[in-house]
Image (cartoon, rainbow, N blue to C red; front, side):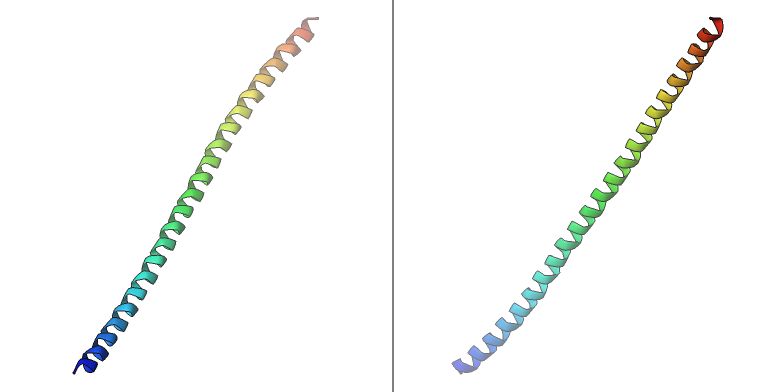
Length: 82
């Protein structure tokens, strides 16, 4: 009866290997999903940062534009008084 038990053990071992292989594949997929989510969040953060930076640069440009316009108006008044 020892050989029959060996066959049954081999079958159980094969089933366990198949189950574990599927579990490993699921874990690997989960790792890829987590990496995908991380990359997606990173891209969103970069895009958000870029939007904030663009707003900051626009505000800075507006500030320079107002300063230039003010200086130009001041110079025009000086020219008119000459």
